Length: 476
Image 1 (cartoon, rainbow, N blue to C red):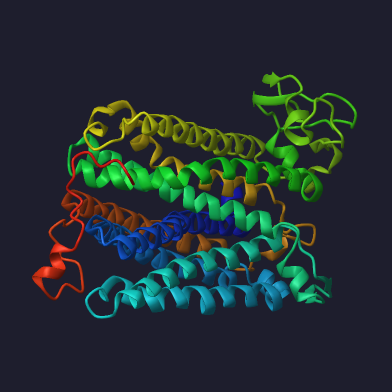
Image 2 (cartoon, helix red, strand yellow):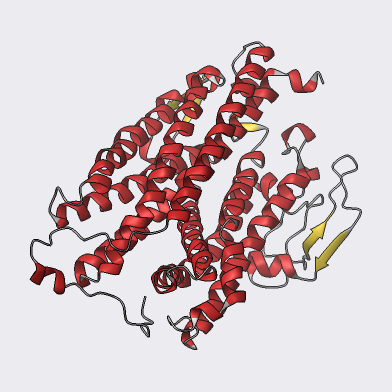
């Protein structure tokens, strides 16, 4: 009990709670923003009214996620001053400016144009409205860029040095473009987009299963599938590059991800541990299921390792990540979901090519629609699991190799942190229930297919709209 009444432990739990909860919402807005840009662009290009109705329907879910994201994100950032003041004081010259860029460049851009995107359909010209949608999507993804830039610097801190306990920036651009930045941004960008695509596809599948507007939601599912054909395999490739990066820059994290206790020397074959039961106390895996030559093939594309893979025993216990089983299985959950989504994309593409996703066929694809419905929350789980690997695997450092987590926490009474943690838990629980309630209302109500598009000042103009009522239309 005394261990859990420790200020550092409670501060870490609180930040884990707030960041994990907050992450659920911008994950969807960053990806769905791109989806809205796509469908509105097609609407302006083709004047097919179905795409206009798609833009209006999915914007409702975007707005809901944006609101919960703002409400949960601002308190999270305040913790850098309340719970992690020594960290902020030490690295604020760089870290604080990056978060400032995120707020002033990205969040303000997204928030500033959001009102036009939501309420400006009949108030501004179509090209201005489309520009607003683009700016909202750009702002959401620019926010991801700056946040991942700050976090990747914490993973691979370069561009300066600690002087008397304060990080002095000597090369600002080197700090921004640190070794982990490009891969981190790409991996998270693809994760948010892939999650959003399968949420859109899963919701569409739910409507198809319930035979509610199957033509309309068959279209949105095929749009999501068309983009996922590129995104799903690309995410796997970028994830592979992440492992290669860890081998060079964070070997303790890679060892924890693989529960690798002993160093594997170069020039020898290395098996991949598919499943294991890591025992941190005895520094062994008493049970494991291995794939011969697997690790060498994954890391070096050949059976024998070209470079050694360091084991956890090569590092002092105080410099190893904690909770090895959590890191080990979180990594496998993330990877397993990534391959499942790619497999679902492949099977769905085959069915599409066979004509099974046509308007008059899609309602008969019960098993496929159920698979998409099952996949809808998996992206969230994969993102959360990947963030556990990223953050817990970085421990015991807040800034890897420079500032320990135990030295980064504020010196406040543990009871105060316990009180704020309890309050955050209650408030975030209310926010989560509220989001489910309003999301359910949006889904039960469904799209308004009678909503007239903007700019139709005459009956003749109305007749020029493509009605999208053909029962055999199969294009997305």
